[in-house]
Amino acid sequence: MNKVRTSQITSRVKNDALRQAAAACLDVADRFNARATAIKTDPSFTEIGRQKTLKDDAAKNYLPGLKAAYAPIARALADAKSRRAALAIPAPDPTNIAAALERQEIRAMVRGMSPNERFAFVTGTADERIADAILSAPGCLSGLMDVQFGQLRDLVVDRRFGGQIAEIREAEETAEAAQAAMLVARNDIKAAIGLDGKAFDDFEKKAVPTPWLLNEGQKIVKVIPGQGAYPAATADEIALGKFYANTAEYLADNPGIQITQPAAAA
Image (cartoon, rainbow, N blue to C red):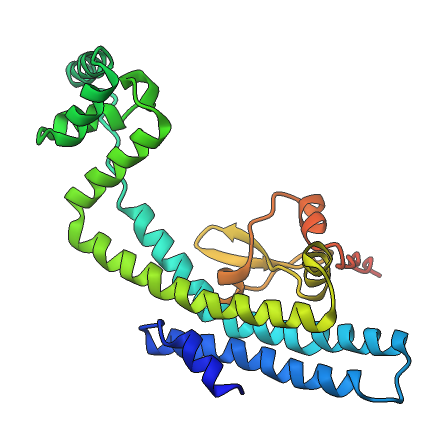
């Protein structure tokens, strides 16, 4: 492992577990670079054999290893995203007609202001009813542009969930700092193989299939195309998987997958 580089990259990761995961990602890249150097300097390989061996080793060992090392970081990112989504502003009661009319009047009042006056008013007022009225409908109904609507929403969330938001932001920053190590490692492997961005993206899809997730009531399972029963997804599979709508969508994202049909009953 390149300890100096690893220390420089992981120094911004405040969480011990994520720092270890980030270091593990970089270790995968360092080991593959050493292996790639050995392959490239081995005179027994033809150029075609050298390229094939590089790709085979990356696909069979190092890219899966990078994905496994990255799993705790992916979980941390997903957790922070989930926590942020949970701090949504509650939707209004659709059965309360009087409140709905009041929100409509508030939006009309705000929409009638000049652009400068409007944004200063909605971000400066302490009356939460005004924020609720605006945020319960598309921003254009209050005369706000999408950027302004997003700024108001962030301001209100900060105001109402200040302490929690600060914790979530810190968690996001820590996870993103760890993710940066994975991206460095991934770029190292890409450069060692000698593929450009698009070609490596395609190669990576074939080498490391994305788990196909399906929500079955109280549990998430991993879909195995061609089989009738699916096992419960592991934590790593949930962190790195996707909920595909159908087989065609799954194959488009994982073109290297071969689907076998289950044997017919005797």
